[in-house]
Amino acid sequence: MKHAISVLAVALIVAVPVAAQTDIIAKLGSSTEEAHDAIFSAFSSGSVYMAGLSDVFKTAGAQARVALVTAAINFARAYTGTSDFARRYGVFREEQNPTPDASTPADAASLNAEQRKGIQ
Image (cartoon, rainbow, N blue to C red; front, side, top):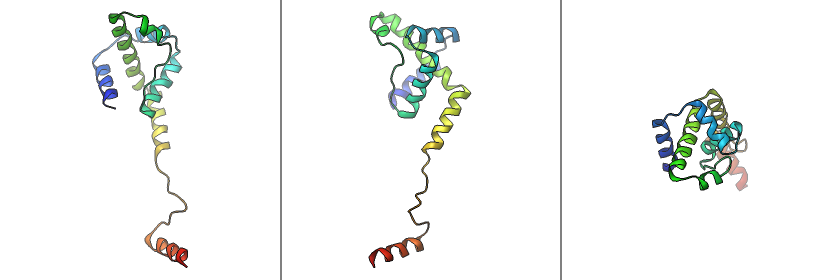
């Protein structure tokens, strides 16, 4: 989790034009929708996976890797600021809210009565 926060902090500092952000997704062999799903999945699951081809990173030189990572982070940063991400995250949060269990008694008197019934 600390690593994800560090990555997001770096993303807040660096800015890249939108065209370059879209180019990085194509360069990685992925689509914008797949990248958006991967970004949302990282926030909802707590684990990060890369959409696209990892060979691009493996074959790139050190400076090119820095540029690729920076562009990918900026793409993620731009997406998390959109209304689509906010909507998806809002739905996710609502789904994560606990729901009251119907079998659990609502108050102490009901709980006591249920326990007496179980003992008898």
